[in-house]
Image (cartoon, rainbow, N blue to C red):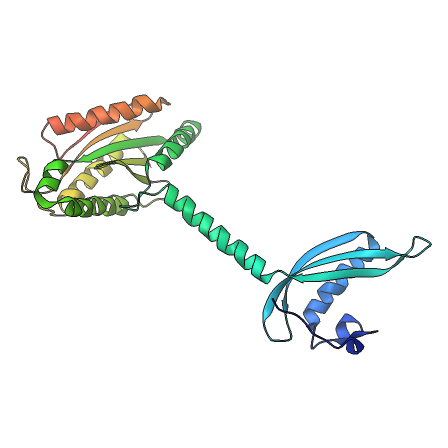
Length: 272
């Protein structure tokens, strides 16, 4: 904690502007204006300011001031104290940053760095509401890595985790707008939320993602359909004020498995 030490004889009967070695002129002007305001409006006053102290360090102080009255109930002066709250302010900043970090961790998948199911459950209803209010076209895609269990059996779970990270990177590279969202919803399953101009452009983006993942050239020796890691995707384009979240999710899931049963490495879409 810093302190300003000044010989009392040097400050008695001096104004704020007579002590430049203690109070810089720009601060003296601010303090004077605050005192004048308090004298015009008797009572109490609290304020906070950064002050450059005599040791050259800048600290944060909290000022508490109050007017004094004489026996005739007239304002006779001002009394006040100042507290060095520099360390307290620093602790508050650190706590704020830690809370932000904890909040980020609570909505983020620790393996891939994309949003988790909790964030999805929070975001989806709001996005549907925005889409209805503004007549936007919202798209929800559910995708699953083809033959992922076989991949883990062949290469091990560490390599399987690396595949999940690679898929997340591909998804994030395509969904770059502030209102685009990528979620890991569990295991090898990911969800996407994004707006589009129409169902054609939505399907085009979804298929570009499918193609990007195939083109990562991650080998998959246990796949009968393809010797690379691929995904199957179910895409729901919500165009007609549809807001049944459970139904939307179930339909995307059904389409995704239909894509798998149709040969994998493909996108099947539906307009609602």
